[in-house]
Length: 525
Image 1 (cartoon, rainbow, N blue to C red):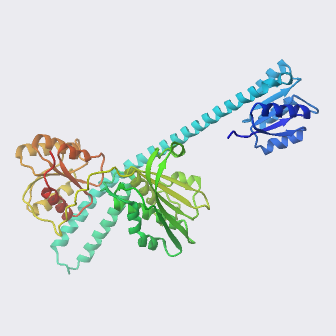
Image 2 (image 1 turned 135 degrees about the vertical axis):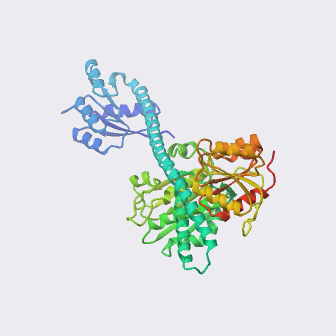
């Protein structure tokens, strides 16, 4: 339906005003005209606004058309101004156009009114479209700057977490060795247990940093989000407290997604905690799932979400809400509105990192006093062959006698892993970097398994694995990592069977992974 055009018309002659309205309607232009005849009425109408065009006679008793134009340009510079006059001459018309008038129509040639208005409306549409495009570009540029800032911080966080994970691996592993060597009732056992617990708490913190930086090694599975939410129901209610009501609306026909189930639980928990803190006096937390189709119009408003089909997880609360400045910063690491000591500022950063690393997008809507809505868009799982049956982990790691090539540039990790493997019966060759590993493999041969850090000086672990496979037929690889700088899933297509173990880890976990890989069926050629 055509929009009704709203016009402010300054005209002292009622017959001329009626003629203008009749001409517009006869030309198919639906309009509402606010007719004013005096200076004070014109000024009041300008202040009130709510119109699309301004028409004005040039000669108004005690009020000149030139003054009307200057007032209109001052108060409503964005509104087109057209003179409709029988007295304006060519010289005055040129002056009026120079002073900001859009056009002029002589009353003696009133038939030009409809074409002139149609042209002005077309120009308005063009300007509006250009302004929307400019606004969208500015928004996209701001999002790009924000993304680049988060990416830079993420690289820093990932690098710090990588180095810290190496230290934690050494602390946890050597503490584990020590724990085995002393009597359970020894006086130092309680202290040793506290050291291990502290290291595990520190490991949880580095996982938050890695999730934010999108460098965490995930273990995705095809699953339904409804299962994740249902399994967490009681825990979420305990987490948010009795004064907050938890409501769920889970779509029965929900598509499956390919995500790390533990990380999706972390997303739900962090959003629930965020909602709880926004409702200190109680309220309602709603978690919903649905299949969603994002169209081009929605994508233009939220460029981070591309058009397509998604599984939508919505978390909404009736809390205090957030202002625009807070919304701009909520995903930045260490940003928090809580009192000192009441939060790390990593919760929503972690949510952002997990969602992005899972191939999804997140949209937040909030306003002070109106609560918050977090919408997470995840791509549906591409139909895959049945998931391989996971190998059952042994209660305690089995020994072995195979040849293992261990590559790690961090000395403490290299010594610890080599010691654990040797004590379990494996033959171990140790190297600090890729060149040394290639040299040892070439001299000795018969390597059954490569155990390597992903981040190495020079060639990284993925490049090393490829070269060892092509030159010496080493076709089983265990990556040690808490920080994945590049994807390595294409190794399977190259005939390599691989797995990873996330740092920090205990020696027994390393030995279980080694045994699983060595006992697994041969990789496909």
